[in-house]
Structures are given as structure tokens and as C-alpha cells.
Length: 404
Image 1 (cartoon, one colour):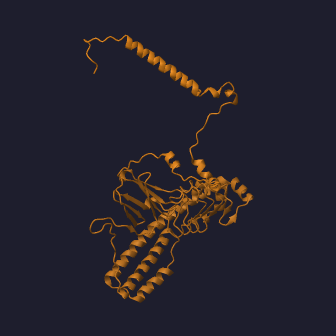
Image 2: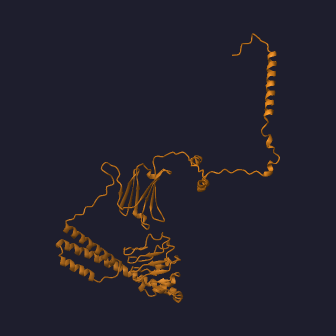
Image 3: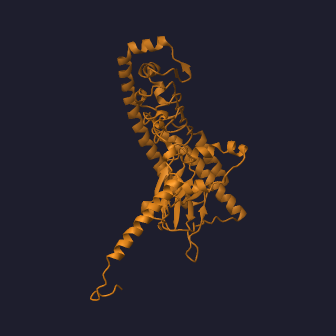
């Protein structure tokens, strides 16, 4: 991971990167080593040409067991007496310091006199801290004087080209202390000169810069689709879960505080480092139930938006699905549909021992036709006999009303 020449004042938002192995923070304004305990896989750290004066801050790296290389060249702490011995004795896992391999004899000698070396380092840190406070105060006073002088010159008359050239030459030839303030002043001066040059070019060519306002809605009120960052996003309509899913690619190591998400019933708006992404939705969603998450592997922003209108769907019938599948008659087709057989529903059948059927006579399960006819004939004779006896014993009583 490279973060060079960004004028970073301190190490932040890096400890959560557990798989980070190499971190390059050269040419920044870092004054102490911190917030790296969470980088469990860190092996190499480059802090070349920074302003690390608190050397005892390297003790925070003792828990990084895979840490092997450290570069502090160009930092004030390298001028301390006993600098190398203190670093070697403090970090047992370190193998290289400022590009030079650490020998076993060096570590043994440094460990023998570790307490005295550490006390010397602490006293030198105290002196450096007092010196830095004085430098800050002087830089603030010099900056105030420079601003007052600049205002007086602007009020009197405009500078000629020769005067500007002389001032520029004087700025680069002036000797300054190597401090974070001087580095910031240098970058500000370069940025100011760049803006002045752009302004002159615009005046010479007659160009006028117009600041365009971002329009989120059209004149009739409908939502506009905006993609200022030109992100290659993905938008899915998840019908099974009745929701919309937006996958917006972001830089893997982009700080989440630079991302702002706004989900509304008819649109979703995401602002990444000042650039707007807005997408209109064809169905209303529920903003309260929506969620926005970052992928730990890719850094993508995943926004899930449940739909407001609920849809009731029947349960899936597995049997109908299997019956609708085309039947294969040929042997070749049967062999090619082996994966389909695995997905079919198989019914488990009970196994019966072969000795269980030895005493059973399956020939008597169905009766003979003659036996069935004889039994039916006997039943008919019995019914006729009962009917005849009832007719003989019947007495007609005129007082009994007829059956309806």
C-alpha cells in the first residue's frame, strides 16, 4: 500500500487492514508510529523522509510478529545517540533496519545495555519536543507577517513580471528548517502558483469557468440518473426476496467516512468523495428496512432495498417440476441425464427377509370362480326363502294407512 507525498500528519485507518504486508508512507508529515497494532501480517514499513521524533513509539510494533523491515532514513530520530541500538533491542523480530541487515552480535550487545540506551533516547526526545514547539511558534509568526506584507502589496499596486520573478527566486533560495510547517508551506506555494498560471491562461484565452450545479431532478419533478464517477455498477431485481440490490464499486482502501448513502422511496443517492451517483427506481422501496454494507474483500458498496409492495407467491412443487422434465428414451440420453436422476425424489423401500415368505400360500389369495358362483347362489336362495315366509305371514289390516 503506497501513500506517498500526501502530507499525512499521522497514521490512521490502517489498523483494520489485517492482511496488509507492506506500507509505504514516505514523504509525509508523520511524527510518530501508531495505530499499526491491528496489521497482523505487516512485514515492511517505509517512513523515509518524515518527521518521526518520538522514537519510543516503535514499541507499539512489538506485537507484530511478522514485522521484519523498517525504514526511518531522513527522520529526526535517526540523529539520536543510540538510535540503531535502541530499535534493534526493542523489536526482536526485526531483521533489516534502514536497508542494513541486523546481526546477532548487534542485538546481543544492544540488549545488554538496553536500559541506559532507552533513558538516553527519552531525554533526547524531550529536547526535540521543546525545539519543535519553538519552531511552530516561529512559523506561525512568520506566516502572519508574510500575509500582512502580501495584503499591503496588493493594496498599493500590482506586481510586475520582474518583481514576481524576483520573489519566486528569493523563495527558492531562502534557507529554511526541515520541519512539517516548511513542507506544507512549500506545497501551498506550488499550488498557489499553479492557480495563478491557470487564471492568466483563462484571461488570455477569454475563457470563463462556470461552476455547474448538480441537478438531481428534472423540471417536471422526475428523478434524474447521475453517474459522475463513471462507476461500472450492477443493479439487480431480486424477485425471490422482493428487493433491489445495488453493487457500487469503491476503492478497496477508501475510508467509509467519505461515502454518504441516501435511500428514498423512489431513488437511491450515493456520494463518494464529492462525486454523486443517483439511480431512479421503478418501484417504491422501504428506506427504513434498507441496508448499506462494504465488502471486506473487494470494498464494494452493497445496498439492499426491500420493496414496499409485498408479493405473495405459492410454494414450489417439486413433484410437478420433476414430471415436467422431458423423458429420454434412448440409452445415450439416459446416460447423459445422470445428474438429473440425482435431483429426483427417491422413495426408500423396506427390505423383507427371504425366509419371511416361506409359510405363505399366495395361490389362495384369489378364490376360484366356481366357489364364488356357489356362494352367490346360496345367498340368493336364502333371500327368496325369507321373502316367501314374510308373504305367508302377511295380514292386511285396513286400519293401517298405506305407505307413502
